[in-house]
Length: 163
Image (cartoon, rainbow, N blue to C red):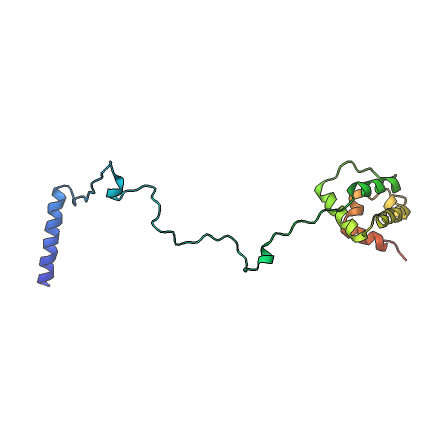
């Protein structure tokens, strides 16, 4: 234990002497501003090797699956559907503009009907429904109500009429 105390007091004396001189001596590295490569101080250096590969695609390696499929052309006749609505349902409010939601619903309507003749038949059916045309109450179904996919099925099935 005396040996450990002697080693400790030697370290403490050395530290005390360094403290009187201003602390631990600083390690300095000379900088050669004419040639910074010699000093090893490169601010924006490039790595010597590039052992990381760039990932180009996250595919399973199947070339057919990697090809981007082109989007199908939208064949929905929006203006024809609106024209049929105005022609066969003149008592209802007219359609002034089409937005993305209306186009989405019209696309679903046309996909369900498959042909323009069936869309026209749907509007003729709506014209014969007293409830939708406001002949029973003062409520009249609008264009958005009619082309909504969930309402379309109800209208086709006459789900609100009592047997």
